Length: 367
Image (cartoon, rainbow, N blue to C red):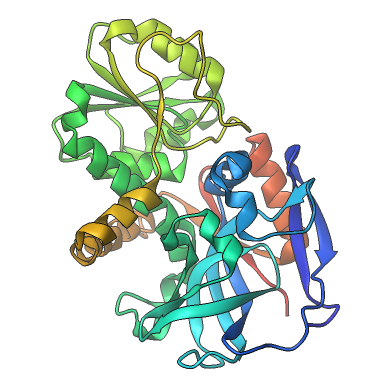
């Protein structure tokens, strides 16, 4: 590697604070190694969730920095194979997968097939296998170069939306007649609302005043309420809380207001919190349960149903993508940012909760 290779690290004590440093020289490739040159990646509140739960779930371990105070926030995106000593992984191949915010990533390829490969580096074992797979775009019949930006943004989010709704649907929504969704302006939240359109259940959005007009413009929810108006919702309807905000204070209000009529608390994300706090003695009602999409996918793999799931998911995802970027009334506009310094500004805005929900951020690496 050369001194031109850099990485953008995140300070664990302040997710919005980043540090641009050179990638340490790792020498010549050895047998089985592949050097991936990152080209583009998305930044959303999902990445803030990865950082918020970095220690609790293991995200900080995936791309070690050698430092305790800074970690590498994972992102999803596209890269090209810059060098390879792994049979079946050719230089120039385009891949989609999980990366640090860095110019390059060195991986130890295993499970190489026509469709892709996995990183066998020991630190990757901290997270489920789905995070360690790299898809070879040439073998992906759903791949469209023109949709890379949309896929970088929505593919990792929509799979969470989709699997969460599948999980809740299989559980018959835990007896609920209404789902209250926090951080309703987030892409994972309205992806879930879109998936629920055909279900016989009311879907209510909770959002901040700044984002209310955007959430209403989506038309994805049956009703939209600002956080301050939570207590105006009727409390006698069996209600399921789909929590994308991860805000402990809001969670206490939800539990206190709905009381015994709160049937389940499904914590999916953390757009408004920088910690993993489920054990709260002040909570009334059911204990929050963290939903982990990767665990569901691993369960499909163990049962031998992963292929059937993906066929269904990819077909529905294509329909969702079409809706999101529909030319006459798109839900978001995609904005490209150039380089890691620009990425640092996007991370700061996301961490501070001041990013525009009507924009989707994609970062291109300057070369």
